[in-house]
Length: 121
Image (cartoon, rainbow, N blue to C red; front, side, top):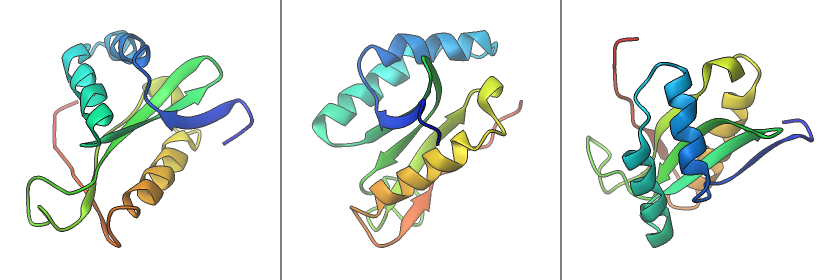
């Protein structure tokens, strides 16, 4: 990432900015989900990484120390809820964020799994 792009843990004040970014894409705001993620981050149940491009939140992903569902439940860390907002796609931001999340996941297990959900749109 360039000098004006950083990856860091989510801050409380990011919740509103991320929710508004979803609304600008004509998606539901996800305010409650993001609040829960922040609370889970505070207890160590999850880490939320955000990519900041200048003054804008461009993307985020969550890292769960031990997968809760599926074939890898209880075995490996899991990357979930990976979102790069449309105006920041195809700029390498998502790749950099995913790389960082994988590094964080490897702090919990040698293998890092990817949780995937399918949706229309």
